[in-house]
Length: 612
Image (cartoon, rainbow, N blue to C red; front, side, top):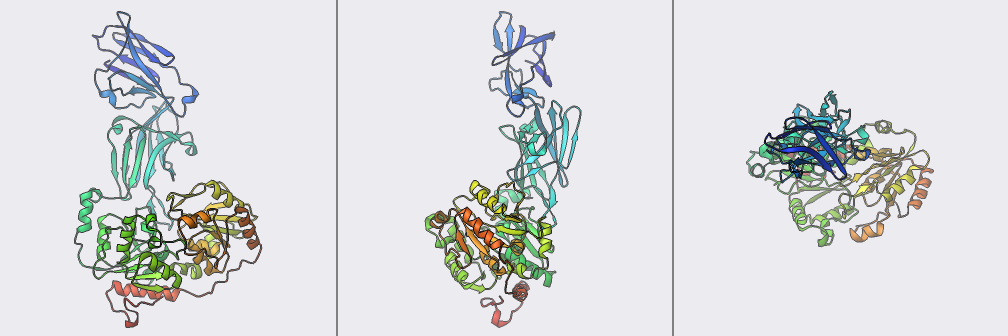
């Protein structure tokens, strides 16, 4: 075969003039279509329309056979291999290792032929055959992103434009994409579940787009699906193995008057580091205050400078800042220099056992080694109570200084400037109704565990059925919340400040989460609930069950009864009213003096700080 041309379901085949054939036919199981001779060595036909069952998926394969002058039917072969570039028509050539002509017919073929970027936008170019207005979306397990602009033409070609930025939790400009996506299509955005396919050169050559917010890779996979991978905005040298080695071992120069903050491995800019940041930024806003973030989707507060993990700016800031503040741990390869001060705030009073308090077989050797080295770098550890200090020292085998004080993050619970009604308005919930904060921890036997399984839904929906009640579901940063379709249930996992949720909640329902210790500051009731309580205690191990804080139950019906009793009683907050202003400010002043390499009063110098 010399050439084949497609116009929708119309197929035109041109043979080499030397070919001696009487006719051509297309064969499929149970189907046979004759091609009509319309000129010397030129044959044409229209394939029958596919049935409705092919509308959303599947395709029909056709084999092109020739009838020789002897009356035999034989396969037709390609004269060249150009056919390996997939076309955009609903009928197109299908690759065959033997070089035989095979056609693939779809009810509708939606393809992408190219991609590029224009500043903060990603442009996708493709074709829909037969022409039809459809929704083309970027879809991941967590997001569905529809185009900000969409142009469709009569010949079926289209251009879809996607914004690469959006508004973050703090109101700033952040990246809209992170991780892996696929291009999908459907008649509506909510029903866009069919795969867009790669065509033309995109099928064999991926397109890379470099932007301020992401490095994007648009690629046709072996299945012909089109993926879009949004990685952090690393340069070519920052993403290579050798480049990373050079950055980690580079001499970045002397220490500088600056501070680096990180929260939950760069997933957000909250918790204890945020409270300390706010205090320092208010006192000395001229100090360079860096936020180590995983990618540009993290919204950094005003006054902070976002530095993406792995970039040259990130390596330089970590190597030259005099003060480091974290509530978890930095990557294993980050070394603390002489003259740097590392404040470890941690992120809660542990109820579940940690690290060295667990059987060795339950914690990987690499993690134990990394955390042993990490704890050896800490100059000061914050603990919420004496009991918390005991647990943290034991878990991390930490021998250094500890300051026992109320966590800086809880300043927002007791003395925040934002009112409870403002918080409720921001969440678009009834100002006068009752609020239940449902905030369980994660399960380490499944690090991708999700709130929203059948057992979770049972308890959440029972609580939501209580009159004039809204359930605020807060997932742990190590888990996710599956969609829960109930008007009285709101997923508040992405809300930046859990302290605000604690303020507006009338009751906390949790299991083994340290949020219980923070919530008790309000004087409002805490209920512990876990259907897998015995299994969790046996598998993970706990320091205590929190009976001194609230009542325990493992039965959903009993949980609803107990919550109902509490909602019908008095729920006035009875916190001590103590302000943490002085405590947080004292800690902030101490870190400022360290950043400026100044002397601190002898009674509270490094190694004996008691500012909390």
